[in-house]
Structures are given as C-alpha cells and as structure tokens.
Image (cartoon, rainbow, N blue to C red; front, side, top):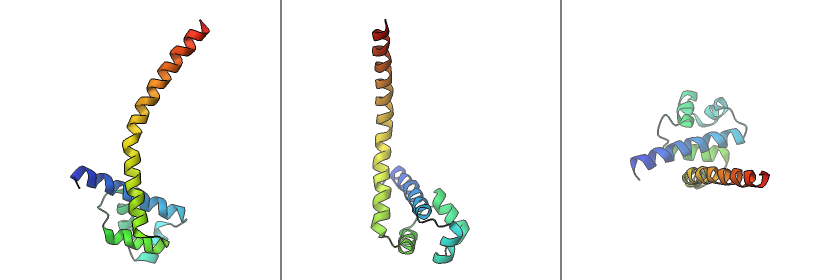
Length: 108
C-alpha cells in the first residue's frame, strides 16, 4: 500500500469508526468506558490524526458486535466511492451547461 493510499485508508477507517459509534448512539465517553481506550485517544483516532491499528479496529468491532472485516470493508468501499466523486462532479457540471443551453434555445 502506498503512503497516499495508507493515508486515505486511515482517514476512511477513522470516519467509519466515528459513524459506527454515532449509529449505535454512543458517546466517546461511553466507548472509553467499554473499551478502556482514553477519550483523548478516541478523539485522535476518529479524527484521523493518528494511524488506526488493526487492534483498535478489532476493539471497536467487538464493542459494537460487528466483524472487524465489516469495518475494514466499509472503509475500502468509501475509498472506492471517493474515487468516483470527482468524475461525477465533472459530469454534473457538463450536464448543467448542456441543459442550460437547451433551455435557452427552447425559450428563443
């Protein structure tokens, strides 16, 4: 995995961990109490300021009753989607311009 890919994965897994926690309606304080991970470390993990190790992903998964692989797969799927977003943005701009041109012709 390249440095850029590793950084991207870390940002994605951080987001997935935060979203999973919020989905289960847990505060960082509650997660800290259940996992033994200090709140300050949770904040750093969920913000992507530190690299998320497999051990932390496993702790989150166990606490939430999920499979570790599910969290990793979600992070990878997010990375796949992120690659598509710039393409969709360009396409959308092109369609908007064409639509505007067609609308202007109809009005004239």
